[in-house]
Image (cartoon, rainbow, N blue to C red; front, side):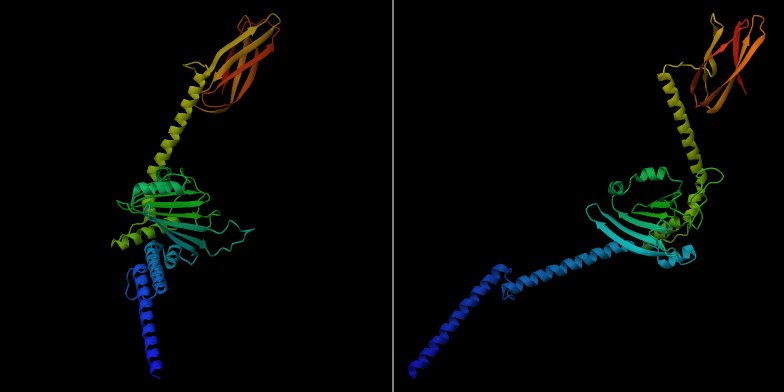
Length: 378
């Protein structure tokens, strides 16, 4: 019995010693594999906790990023505001998205509005559903913005403004433009921090008459019903409210007030284009070996009779700067007594500006013929 008691005590001491050795090895591994965290008793448990912490941190960062970019979405007109603009419920958001490019410092928010009074029919009414695209771009560097714009657009911002129907500046730091076609219209405004643009597709002219001329008595007149201008104006004022600025301007009035300036610019461009065409045609005429100082009207005219009584008439008509559908010339034939023995007419058709039209003809005269004369018939 005494021997059995001694054996049990010895076995207990052996197990205690072995357990301390195992715990020492585990502690050593935890210390080297988890940064020496004394609260981590198992390597697997520490690894799982680290992964969970990293996942939570990543989710927090993504939430913060989405929250930051979504601030642009808040600048869009509310559906209640859209109802005020159109005096009825007609436009509804069908999509809103926002993105952030940290590398170039460009944030964007894009929204699409649909006319909910129209039902999409992929066969009959495929193109009758009017839509509006709204885009807000927040930028830090103007050069990065220009590079970004070239990536998303077929034309530079400068060209878009130069070819706009109307331009104007509601404040010192905002430049705006408006342009249109038979398919719809677009309004763009640029501040020192944002670009706001709104584009409407209105092929059947259901929301505004975009089928007008750009110059002349029947030119387009914009007013408070033009949607793209109203949307951009609302976004601009939301931006100003964030900065504590209150403004009461009407963007369509500012753009419309500059119409006479743009009309003059269009006329000047048209005149310059015509002058360039004239110069080009003159240069082409010179390259073809025509007279350097060409005179207008009938030139190089001659009548020659051969021994068989056949009279050959030749010459050229040098047109001026006015295009003519038809020029009528009359040829008079005289005898030795300067009496008219024969009259003949010829038509020169489709003569462009500064064009030279040559002519050649023959006639048989049995009477005594001396000379001939040619003149234009009004």
